[in-house]
Length: 374
Ligand SMILES: NC(=O)c1ccc[n+]([C@@H]2O[C@H](COP(=O)([O-])OP(=O)(O)OC[C@H]3O[C@@H](n4cnc5c(N)ncnc54)[C@H](OP(=O)(O)O)[C@@H]3O)[C@@H](O)[C@H]2O)c1
Image 1 (cartoon, helix red, strand yellow):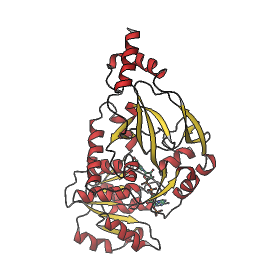
Image 2 (cartoon, rainbow, N blue to C red; image 1 turned 180 degrees about the vertical axis):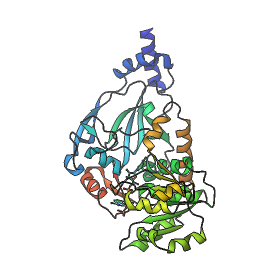
Image 3 (cartoon, protein in one colour; image 1 turned 30 degrees about the vertical axis):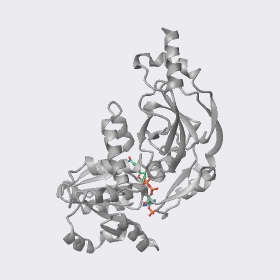
Image 4 (cartoon, helix red, strand yellow; image 1 turned 90 degrees about the vertical axis):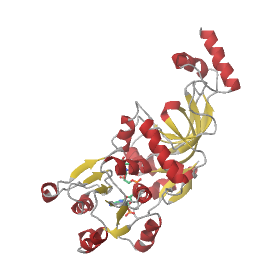
């Protein structure tokens, strides 16, 4: 049986990497890993201690492969630098990989080789990670077929590279907490963030109005115009949340059913004050690094719901059945193809100039996602 399995796998490899019964996968994996492809080297941005990213991240050569029966070799094309990547390197995030670790939780790659037991992917497919922690800041990697999910390979590169975290977070928060209908209103802070820009676009595609709160800055008008151009209904400064003008605003649209908080501190408390009776505030980020204070009156007289969301946990909860994840990715790709969802404003940075990207990603008031191009 062993000899026969090996020959089945090798024959499949020379003709078309394809179906091999799952019953035999474990044995095939061993046989193929010694025969399918040789080990090779890629470049990776690694850290072996926690600290400030520009100080602890180094570009190193890393061996990968060979490609096992249920594995794929992926050439990484582009990967963003997100706040959670920075927090992971600093050692302050909720999940931390073993060290040494490769940075990056998001990105898109092209499959360049598949193991003989791989059934769902083929060379040329684009893939993104299913979960956090895969380490996307590298030029190539061997992943398990089950660790990635495919995307159409004709999406704009930056939209694909930034799809897996922020648009998924925006999509779920708009879908899972309140029954939002066209004409309803959502209020959010950090509206110029990656998540915020995805919320604006997905909500607009569904006829939902957004009140978008950003910090004041000299180029407020340009930024406000940019957010309106992607579908923001209103853009206001944080200070405006405390002013009587808000009453005027709610003469033109209903009070929000849903508030999305990526900041915390006073900003979150002010968002909450404007919710409808019984509305929800969902906290997904804490950029101000300050706790959320809930006024007693909001709980007693408005019965607001105070919730949290973490897309990594949502994805892990789906791991037994990929249908909800697949359906969300398909919906998001369809919005991209209809030009209703675009990547956030991005700075493209060559992979080897990663220090530039890491430093830029930690600056406030930039309104731009730094994306490493491999
Ligand atoms: N829970 C989840 O599943 C989930 C998923 C994705 C992201 N997140 C979190 O969501 C947040 C945004 O992520 P992102 O990738 O969208 O971010 P991003 O594109 O890098 O944007 C950062 C945002 O944070 C704002 N900001 C930075 N420092 C601030 C401060 N001290 N006070 C108020 N606002 C501040 C920036 O506004 P300025 O332009 O004014 O600096 C900008 O709007 C992060 O905390 C991230 O970890 C959570």
